[in-house]
Image (tube, rainbow, N blue to C red; front, top):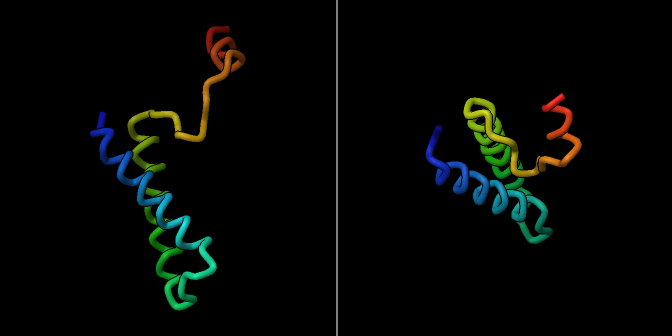
Length: 71
């Protein structure tokens, strides 16, 4: 398994980029670069989660999901 700190940093970076993209005060000239960086970071997170078979941060296990796996 990869170092969890890398995923933590990538998620933090994703959140910062997302806030900058949504901020009306962000320069229109910077939007394309921020968008590209945000997509790149999201893809890196997805690749690591897929490779390490880690649940995405937004996905929660429910009792139904656990029971389905057991059946």
